[in-house]
Structure formats: structure tokens, C-alpha cells
Image 1 (cartoon, rainbow, N blue to C red):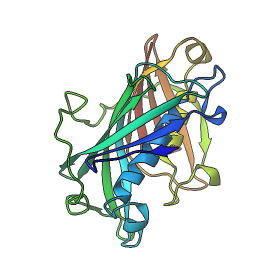
Image 2: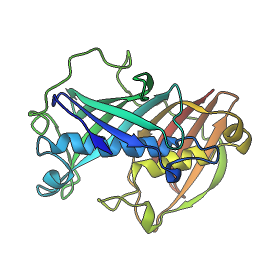
Image 3: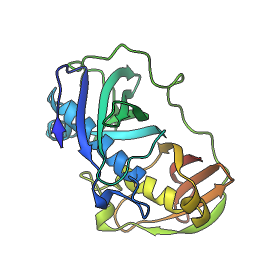
Length: 249
């Protein structure tokens, strides 16, 4: 991994696609790309001393709330890709961040936008992020997407797929299910014929409620030729943990 930055308004890193980050066809998994997003966002806020460790010292945490990703060309095993990220400022309770993915020719092969919350881990209350990101210069170029991320409409429950038992390896620093695990579960809930014959063009996901060790969730999927809608709920409750929509090509 190489790091090259000349302007704190944007932050850029090079990632090499390893075999452990690919699917059975040797293509980079969307979950791996989303892990790169998470990593590079953390490195960027480290530059203003508001990263995970800095916030943790003050009983605060960055929590991903909404994410939308578009993939135009899926990188493959051994490919090097550049990912660039920047802040587009705060809006109410949300701190907003965008990403672009480049191949080594400099072509844009993917893009994403995300909305983050700041949580007081002791009181479980949300706080406004403006003070935390005040030292982060905002990139003034037009947003990637025309509309900011909103809450996905309530989805039809769809077909029950399976129960999801929360294990130790599913957890993050804050002892909650890592956000990329939900993306993995959402993708895996789709029919094999879709997964084997199509690729993901777009994923949008809302994280609605935390899940912890030893809980049991259940996943529901409603798919058509080009779209899959997924709900993950806490079993035997009405609590939705996340909603996701995947568009296929």
C-alpha cells in the first residue's frame, strides 16, 4: 500500500488486490472495496487528530449510517487501484464523505458517498460532528451524486433466507457488528444464479440499529432480474438492523 498526498482536502492511497480480496472469478469483492473505504477514511481523519483512537479517548465513535457505491469496472486479482476520499462537510447530525476509485490508467472505475454519525459511547447519544471535523478542509467540487443520501424507503419483507448468528469475528472495535458484515450478508442472500451471472453495479445501504455478540438476526430478500432488496432484522422483534438495495448488471 502506497500513500501519496499533497493536499489535506483529499487523501489518496494505492491498494493491490490480493487473492484474499477476490471472489471465485478473481474479481475484487465489493466487501473488500468497502473495507478499503473504511481504512482510507480512518487514515484521512487521523491527519486532523480525529481518528478512531482520538475519538475513543473522549468516549466518542464514528458510526457509518448510510453508504452508496457504484462500480463501473470491477478490478481483478493483482490489480493496483487508487482510492481517493474527501469530506463534503457536515449536514445536521451527519458528516459526509465521498470516494473515487481509479485504475492505473487513471480511469474512474467506481465511486461512493457516505454519511457518518458521531456517537457518545457512554451516553449512547449522537452529537453534532461540526466541531470534530472543523479542522478538515471541505472539498468544494460538486458532489458525486445529485441528491444527498436519504433513508431508504421501507422495503417489503421479501422471502426469508436464513438466521444469522452473531459471532466474535463479526464484531468491530466497538463490539458491534462491523458494517461490511452486513454487506456480505446482503450479497450472500441473493440467488446463486444472480451471483454467478451478474455483477454489482450499485449498492445502497442504511444502518439502522446495532447488533451485538450472541444475538440472532434474520435476513429477507426480494429479487428481480436487476434489483435485490434486503432487510436484516433482529429475530423475533420488529427491529430492523439494516436495509439494502443492490442493482445488478
